[in-house]
Length: 107
Image (cartoon, rainbow, N blue to C red):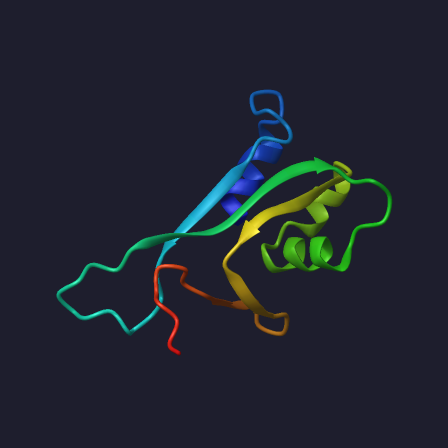
C-alpha cells in the first residue's frame, strides 16, 4: 500500500487525483481446504483527495499505518476510504486483521 500511495504522490500530474485505487490480497483464512485455491479479495479501496481542514481519526490512523502520514501532510492530501475488508488495526505494531467476504459466516 505504501508503494502505491507514494507512486501516486510522486506522479500526481499523471494520475487523476480522486481516482479509485484498490489493493488486493489472498484471503488469510485457514478454513479453506488445501485443494482449493484461496481467493483474492479486495483489501482496501481508497482515493487521495485534498484535506478539508482537520483529518478524521480514521484518515490519520490509515496514513500512519501505511507509513505515509508525513508525505500526505506535505501535499495537504488525505486518504479517503471507499471500501475496506480491514476489521481491526493494531497501532502499536502496524498489523491489521482482515475479514474475508468469500467465507460463509458460521451460524
